[in-house]
Image (cartoon, rainbow, N blue to C red; front, side, top):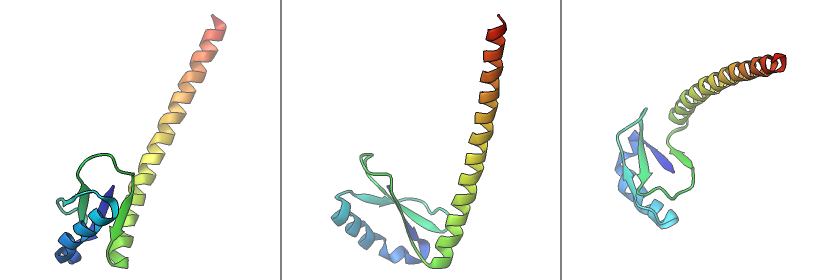
Length: 99
């Protein structure tokens, strides 16, 4: 779980950490800024995979576009790798049929 707080709302960090503890019963710590956001990350690893983004609409929109662009590149790469693997496997099957 990660909670991204826009850097312009830095003064709210302590209050947000208290709020998150009240809701999830997890302690959150601020980390180094990433793309104009302060990640609040829980201590421990037994939490659901959730991402909260808190900020102004334009800042959040820019951040989401960056994430979607990165994800689309990763998905394209996985697709291309899968195609090569399936071609390789089909060639191996054809080769085994001739033996």
